[in-house]
Length: 390
Image 1: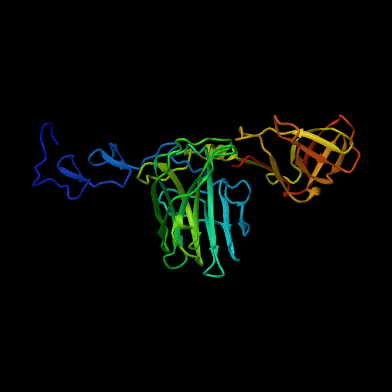
Image 2 (image 1 turned 180 degrees about the vertical axis):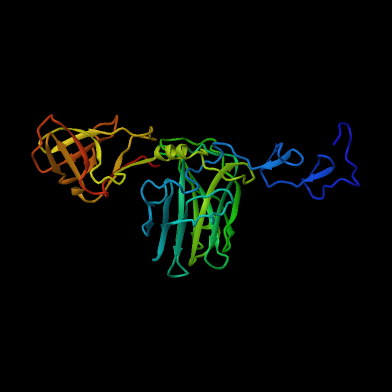
């Protein structure tokens, strides 16, 4: 449009709220974008303008919202309090039987967002007994520091679908003020929505309570819970009941504001997301080499070897526990020319508070003070996981 001219309201091409009057060689319309989109200049567009999704590193406080990181090798579980994809935990209480959570893989080209070919999604199958019981089934993520989003309006969005019908799913928020802090606030501003049998995006917009007057302790966090069955007793997510169905989730995002903007992981990069996840959990694995070496050690006695391990990132706190296989013979020591199969699984030596020290035990034969190497004992099962989860 020429400088100084105003559009004639009788001939302007705009027809809906949010449409823009544009001009190239003739008057034209730029149809309104989606909620949260940003208007950008684009010389390739007919009128030099287009709408673009709002991408900003750090806007999403959920880590691994696309389920791409799976350090624990999660495939399927029926056990409550089991970690799933990195940073996500399976929760539940008072169910009778039949809840299975599993990792699923998208067939190429079927991911729910065009142009975002994600790999994995989460499936929860409920086959519950007793409609009158308080059956609670959910998965959760804890976001470090209860100050996160405190007193703010936020929007939580995700893609989901069910196997049949239009079952309800619910979301609730918990503020935990940490060890030595104020009493945790559970079940705040919960909400419920019905989902369908096709992938679709859903969102909840809520205002979290202020933490004014609260005492913050060590290890505080904000917790998001996604319920697929809750019974009438979980009032803050409504009486969504006890539901038998298959529920699937992907693309979880939590951001400030009242609009669900374009999905993005917490960092926007694969390397950044892995580093964020490793702040809370890191697992060393063999990488397909059944005799891979884990770390250097020195012999503390004739039966015990100790070694520190270099972690790829600074973890939230010094790890207080490690995960290993249940089989001692999956690990071995090489000291000098002697190979010794471990007689006990490796453990964390908590007497050293500065860095993780792993203790390996064999039946006998180590030379005090001699150096060596710890590794996998002809198996790909060997691993060591360092836990600093909230």
